[in-house]
Image 1 (cartoon, rainbow, N blue to C red):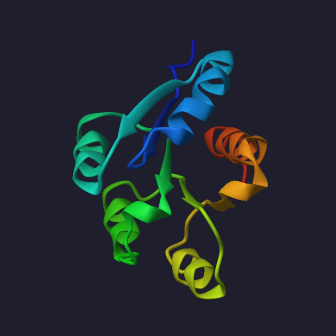
Image 2: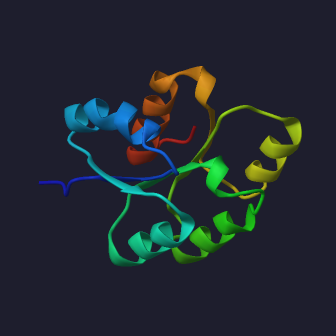
Length: 124
């Protein structure tokens, strides 16, 4: 029997985690939430996480944080969620070799598909 898959959502508010509750329950995924980067690092050190969904607002233009995460968990799929897109933001974030770059206006279904693909080991 497979171990339960875990999604860690790092966001200052609870919008993403609230929107993903039903999806996570339907798929049998555990959902963890952190509100800042320090909590995110501690959670990654203490628990097995299969996918990290990170709100870009937490990065505050310090995209090097993604390198820190990748240093800890090289194969961890990281999905960055941004409120809006700029060419500069997308370019800087994609340099960090993330799994997927999600713009919130694309809708929650797009994010759910990216999470499913990440958990199933599919490239996006």
